[in-house]
Length: 366
Image (cartoon, rainbow, N blue to C red; front, side, top):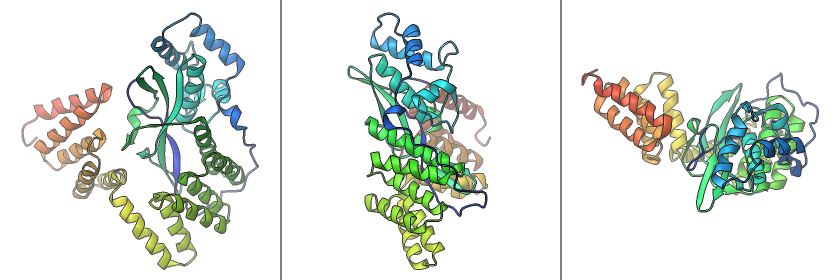
């Protein structure tokens, strides 16, 4: 965790629709919490925060530092990370668990209580991918931003797990709470509670109707609930907002394929391929898959393309160095590792430096 520069937290927002598994059921409806309750601070949390952080006047930077300590130290909240804990501020306080979105909500609420200018911020174009059964999640990222005079900070719990090709942009509370509802929709779907998931997806879109990712996600929920007409409507609405939205293109193509409309599916998949060809994050993921399979030449080609499309990402250069080492391209590996070190900082830079020192100590063909 650190509090400097532009950093990012993450949340799941891009779903791929798969065939509904036999184990999935439409579960009991979970009530959608009122929007105003998501960021609301319980009185006992307020009292604890005042006692430990705001017991005496302190300058803004010191208040921010103490806030971070309060979040993580055992004598404060002692918060624990859990990736499926999309909680309101009150529930995060009650359970002492949070994922990155819940950390953002909690940090924003506490920072405002401390008199700091705090807000949510998001990076739309970033990845922390994983596979879960037959679903693929592509991540947007959120963080808690704090402005002190002309300086901007982000309080982050997963900065070294995120690859992004853009910088965070401030968002208002309405959009931040919409992300909360959308996250809950995904978690409920993963648990098989499709009706509750759809209710939360509806709440997200009520607050942020122009969000293509939310529409595509709701389409997946409708698809899994057996409502193909509603699913197609959501996918089409998402593409009307963003014709290059990869998840919506893929989901609508699969919808047409299931319906037997191969021609329409092919057109959409061609559009998707064109989008992915200019997406550095997709190229990185392709390369990583080739690397896992031991296809080093293909991995090299796609890592190179990722670097060409977005040169400032240190993870791309490090991956390229790694494959060059395997292929025996020692000088190219050192060059890419040096660039990765230049683009990174903190513990990540130190790790790159250690690897670079090791490479430099090896014989030319080592």
